[in-house]
Image 1 (cartoon, rainbow, N blue to C red):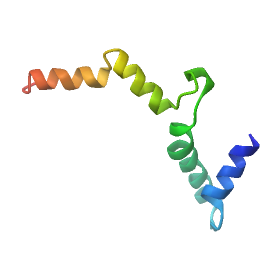
Image 2 (image 1 turned 90 degrees about the vertical axis):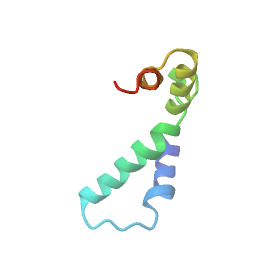
Image 3 (image 1 turned 90 degrees about the horizontal axis):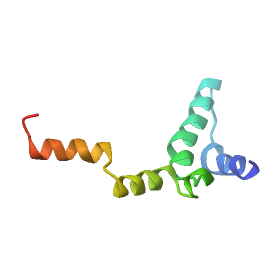
Image 4 (image 1 turned 120 degrees about the vertical axis):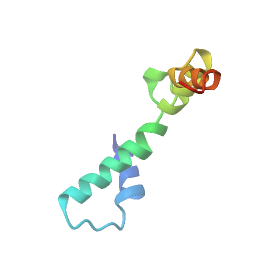
Length: 78
């Protein structure tokens, strides 16, 4: 947990001046949702990031996104 706050301070809030509390909240939320969560490895996913886990799952099975794209390719009028 300490390393998370250290990363947050150095990567997102260092040198920033927020005029409102909501702006600070939005900045922290943005850091967590766009930078930290998609690339951070999770033990429940076999120490893969969510993005890597999804790519691996889609390559092993028919991913709904790939299936929809394949349907459109076969029948472009759909």
